Amino acid sequence: MTARMKKCEEWLLKDKVRLIQLTALALICLGSFLFALYHVEAMGKYNTEYTPDEEHYIKMARRVLNGEYYGYWGCGPDAVVSPGLPIFLVCLMAAFGSGPQGINCIQLVQCLLLAATVLFTYLLAVRLTGKRGAGLLASLLFALNGLPYLYVFRLLTETLYCFLMMLFFLLFARAMEKGSLRLHGLAGLCFGAAVLVRPLIIIIAPFLYIPWAVSCWKDWKRLFKPLLFFAGGFVLICLPWWIRNFVSFHQIILLSTQTNPIYAGLARDVKALGLEDPGSLLGNVKLLLGLLRDDFFGTVYWLTFGKFEIIFMSDIPKAVCRILTLFVRDITVYLGLCGGVRALFSKKGWGPSLVFWVYLASSFLFVPTGRYALQYLPLLAILAAWLLGLAFKGAAVRKEKGERGYAL
Image (cartoon, rainbow, N blue to C red):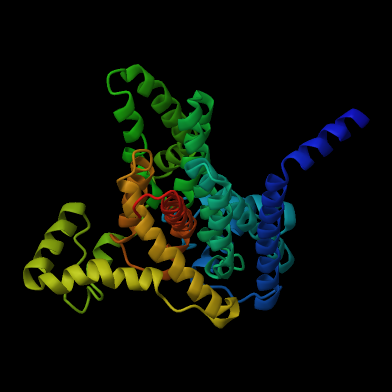
C-alpha cells in the first residue's frame, strides 16, 4: 500500500500540469452541477406549474406506471412522440415516485446529467483536438452558458437528449480511433437511444461513416464490419418500439406520427399565406418552390437568417445570468461557426465538421425555436475552442519566427 502511495505521489509531482487541469475540470463540472441545483431551487422546488408538453409527458409516464396505455394525448394508445423521454420518466418515477417530491428527484438527476454533459464536452474536445486546454475551454464555454440551466427544471427532452448526444459522439469518436467493433456497437446503441428521445439526429446517420469510407475505399471489408455492428446496436434498442407500433397499429412506424414539421417551418406563418399541409415530402418541396417563385429573397432570408436569429439569438431570462450568458453565447456561436468552416478544410477535421453542418442544417428544416440551440452548444463550444487554439498557436509560431529573424 505504501509503495502504491509513493508511486501516486511521484506521478502527481511529475505531472503538475495534468493535476491542475484535472482540478480545473472537476471545478467546472461541480460548478455546473451546483448552479443547476440553485436554478432548480430558484424556480420553485415543488412547483406544479408545467408547460403543455411537460404536462403531457408526466401524464404519459403516470399512465404507464398504472398499467394503462402509452399515449401522448390521453385518448388512447398512439405513437405521437418517440418513447425515449417517457421511458426515462417511468424508470425514475418508479424509483422516486410520481408526486412533487419524485419530480424534484428527477430534476436533481437532470442536474447530474448536465454536469456529465459538461464532462463529455471536455472529453470529446480532447479526443478531437488532442489538446486538454481546448477541452477545458470548451467545457467552460458550455458550463458558463445559462441556456442549459433553463431546462434542468423542466421535464422535457433537452437535458436527457444532450447527455445522450454527447455520449454518442464520444463513443463514436473513440470507436473510429480505436477501430473496436464493440465500441461501434455501443455507439449504435447510444445513437438509437438519442433518436428515441429526439429523432432529429437520425439525419446525420448517412454521413457518419463517410470519412471512414474515404480512408478505406479499396478495402470495403474494413468498413462493413464496424457499420454492421453500429447498425446492429441501433436496431437492437429501437426494435421493441417498432414491434409495439406494428402490433398496436398494424403499420410500420419507425419514429413517431407527429404532424408535418417541415410544412410548418416553410414560412413565418403558413396559415396566413393560405398554405395547406400537403402531408408528404414531395408536397413540401412543391410548396417551397412556390414560395421561392413568389418571394425568393424573403423566403431565403426566412429559411436562413430568420431561423438562425430565432434559434440562436433569442433573448435569455435574467434568472440565468443574462449578461454573462449573452456574452458566452455570442462567443460560442460565432467562433464555433467559424471553427466549423475552418474545420472543413482540415485534413483530419473535415469529417466531423461535415456531420456537424448536416446536423445544424437539419434544424433549419422545421419550425424554429430557441430550444433547438441547446443541442448545438457543446459542439459549437468545441469548435470555438479549437479555433482559438489554432489562432494562439499561429501567433506563437509567428512570434518564434520573428525572434529567429524570419519574415512574419
